Structure formats: structure tokens, C-alpha cells
Image 1 (spheres, helix red, strand yellow):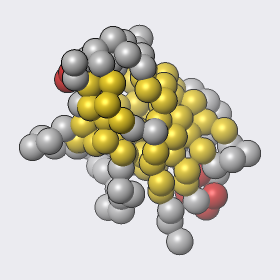
Image 2 (tube, rainbow, N blue to C red):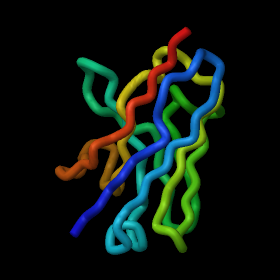
Image 3 (cartoon, rainbow, N blue to C red):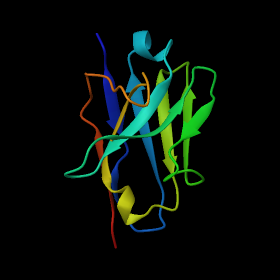
Image 4 (cartoon, rainbow, N blue to C red):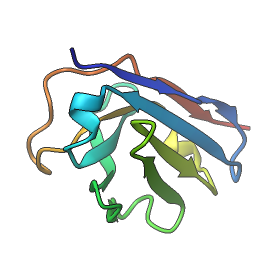
Length: 118
């Protein structure tokens, strides 16, 4: 059974930092490139970045240099370190396997809300 549990969101001031965690089922985590996604209110879900099983990362231009994705394969857990947060980073953040830039998975966890506001 696929399991995706995101945590670590909250309210932070502009310029602040947050670290999100994603606990995934071993069957998914161990063989897949994983991704962080986000969905601002009233907008479509977008890909934030990805990490391969070997640790190679890739980021959307909007977060490059500010966000860092890592994974602990022994714990089936992925992380998103977010620094220099901006109000436009406000969204519900989700983790999931990465299929392609144009094709998103059909099953999602509950996500975790990140609000950047003064």
C-alpha cells in the first residue's frame, strides 16, 4: 500500500527557513526518483524539485539556490530544506514519486501547508 506523509509546514516570515519531511512506503521510495511538489491556493500543482535514488537533484528555477532536497534511503524519508522563503512560496507542499515533468501521479498524501507572511 502506498503511503505518503508530509510534515514540517507552518507559518514563517519572509526570509525564514523551514524543513519539510516526507515519509514514504518502502516499495515506492526504494526504486523511484522522488519529487517535491506544491500547489498554491487556486493554482495548479507544480514540481519544485526531484532527487534520484542516488541523490542527484534538480530544481525549478523559482527555488534554485534556496531549496535543497535530500533523502535518507535507510529511513524511506525525503527532506526539503527551504531557505530565504518568499511569500510566493506559500502553498501546500506534497511529495511523491517523479514520473515526468508533464505527468503527475494520481495518488497524493495530505500535504503540508507552508505560509510565508509577515
